[in-house]
Image (cartoon, rainbow, N blue to C red; front, top):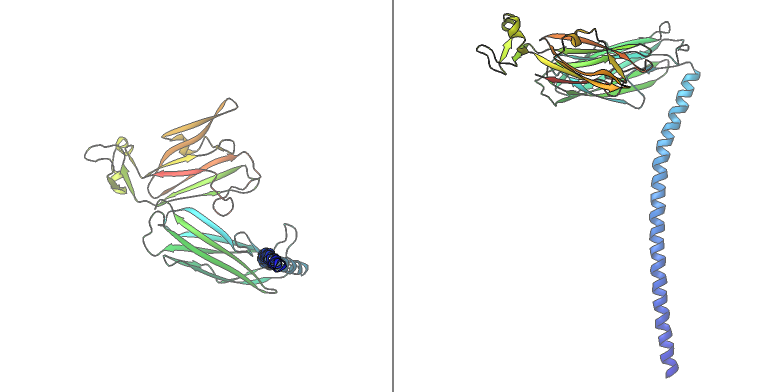
Length: 328
């Protein structure tokens, strides 16, 4: 009888031990399977991405070996993306897309390259292109087309439009380049851009004002602050009263360790106010504010500290090296 009881106790103990071992094994097995599945998915994803990269590199090497080069300043194989934040939303916005068949400044394709152009834009604008196909001639290794965006509705500050562009080479080989542009409306009627080049000692900030009115900024006569005046009424005012109006007041802020204001520019000479920064015990202009007339443009030049950089904005440099703000 005692032997039977002892045998039962041993069996119960062994069952408990077996259950613990079984649970541990199941836990390890589940973990192993989860790790295995995760590993397979990871390497599958990485494999696809790496495979695409390898395919693209091999194909580009093959095309280069055939002396075929198809490039653009704004379109890329992996869809270049741009965001532009300074459109007026009133006037048309044009994007020039330069194409080339160059490997570098000495080597280019020796045959003409024919390509087709496709594009589409958001419903709040209309888009037209100067052409729907083009040829990059071997004699020049360059070509271009311009796509112009025109609002078909009233756009407000903060609205945005989009544009997708493709250039597809079809002869003698095929290759696709594309770009996606998001264009945001800043203050309606006002826009700016920076034009620059590598190794050029200066850059130009181009400001455009398409507003066709002035506002009273200091009350005079029968006019209160904020009243709008059309251009004809403004021109009939005395010089003293004109000084009390503005179509827009532009403020420029910049780092004098990067760019230096051209002190002969008309914007500086008629500045309403300016600010300075002390660098190595010297005062440098780092901010100016000035008025801009209705339906006019203003060019402000800056000298570059580092001439090797191209500060062209938008499209080349990611941000505007000069902060531009407006008061209307």
